[in-house]
Amino acid sequence: MNRVYVKKRYGQIPNHILNDPTLSLKAKGLWAYIQSKPDGWNFSIERMRKQLKESKTSIQHAIWELEKARLLVRKQAKDIKGKWKGYDYFLYENPLPEEPSVEEPSVENPPTDSSADISKRDIDSYSSEDSF
Image 1 (tube, rainbow, N blue to C red):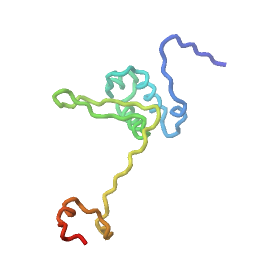
Image 2 (image 1 turned 60 degrees about the vertical axis):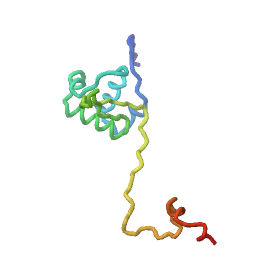
Image 3 (image 1 turned 135 degrees about the vertical axis):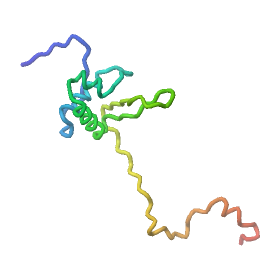
């Protein structure tokens, strides 16, 4: 039996993330690393590369895996002047729901339903004399 004694602050990783067969060990480790940092922590690929002793490509791939699994969202961050300053990282314990796909309506066969909506303008164009 192995025993581990931890005397300092530690993070917890949900079992469903650890057991997810679609995530590599690097992606799981990166999730744990990001989760262990306090809110407001300044993330950059270069900083993670130095601290985690991984290549830039390796970090980028792990980020891509977490984004694909919808466990991580990166949004471009801008300073007060609107200049790009990097990314804000949003880490999630459970995958975000899929965004519904928006399909363009088909123009080939427009609807021929005679009960189409009537605009207010169409209604206003009828005078009271036109009614029954």
